[in-house]
Length: 107
Length: 376
Image 1 (cartoon, rainbow over the protein chains, first blue to last red):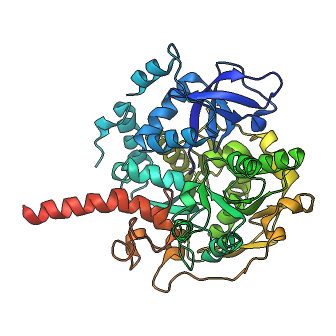
Image 2: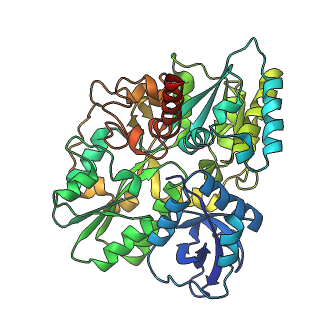
Image 3: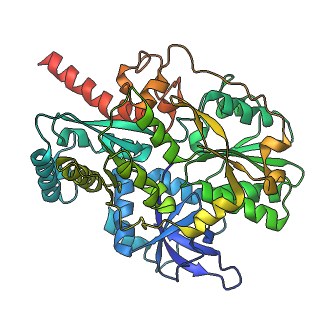
């Protein structure tokens, strides 16, 4: 339950500054940026997500490490289940996203 | 058994392990408490105890929000959901936690509308999609999770969603640490501080542990190396009788914490005068309830709850394991009546519970070793 899931900001909404679409290993979901109101992430930046809310900004390197840690803890599946469980808005993997590379990097 | 080679950067792990051995005074028995259930899980999963000398004992702290919740509160939440117009929502971890008359999942099997959500925001969305029902969110968690519940309530208020309420069982970590230090049964030398709670509250709230109690604290990440480095940090301090707060998890934890998160919590929540914790009894100012300004979204205000104090089954020793007085396998029910398949208490249900962690990693390892030894 203390899962902190790394995700990359792939879409921002000018009329909804506290919402973003993040991508975690190819899965895209909307998360709430309200807790990063003082330091909103830019497109392409990485965040740590907990129960559908972005909690902190992290480097890409740390994001990859975090995914490895979740895998090593046996929590990667639970993490993906959680992300997929966030309000099902979009669920397609775009063809040339970084997801494939990320999957290769962490396996 | 994790062989060092199975870790990333095995050479660094080996070096750090050797440093721990070098720093640990052989004439001393160290008791280091990892507060957070996530660290307990990591310690067992990575087999870190095998990398430590035998005079370093890791004590499991009460940082598992599912584990510390007394059974009566589960009953209260389920009582609210007896109303056929109410949809009971909670995180997956809550679903198998036993109440007096069964877990939420068991209630679901008997016809109650019980649904898993992965975010409080999704409970709110469910309310928006079901205007003829009332959605109640059974909120649990320390300061890591409370800000998200707070923001969700702010959104509910701003958007005028009235068929939504939160049953708050959020608890705060500092009073629990204080209760551990005040307990006559416990002697703790140092703490491995929680990783994700600290992203919200920062490191400052731990300063009294160093200043008044003279115990070192290292706020730690969750990788094997993070935890081992944190042990090095506290041992270095103990060696020279120093006590300060160190941040091993700098890459994620800001010293000042997350101001926006703290603001949200302050706007929505206030401290209860006291709250009951499994194992630690009643602790003052240790839990959050909704402020008067959010009364309408407070499930405790909108619904009648039994509010009955329910003790754990007599034979279960959940409280003692939670306090760190007993190790999981020392509980009489461990591995027999109480297993992850049929848990008696929350510590065996939650992924952060020390009993579940011990059962899944240590217990199995011992069983394998024993069975190999008996055949040899």
